[in-house]
Length: 126
Image (cartoon, rainbow, N blue to C red):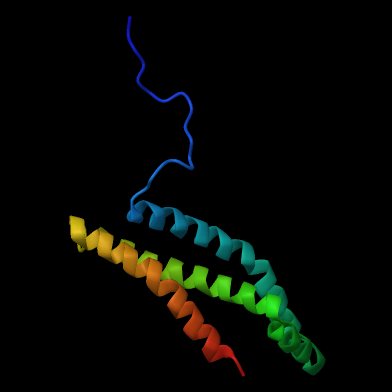
């Protein structure tokens, strides 16, 4: 009789992923978030291009605090997705595949993305 050593119940909260694993999952989530935000971005663009009144409405909407928070989160997702994508391109070229390099680059992406998003958001402020 064979003993099955596979887990019967997999508790996802207790699994400790390495930083590159977390980065990979966050890269996928940020891509989905950016894709789902496209209709809203297109609607906002359409509102802004509809005329002077529409442009003012779009400007007022973008100045609201909840929209600023949402804009920061979207910029964070964009920065994360871009930086992680560049990291994966380097890995495809066999650069940064060794043990200390891929951990450092994963941490760099995770820490740089919110900083880039904040800098872009500050730069967008009137």
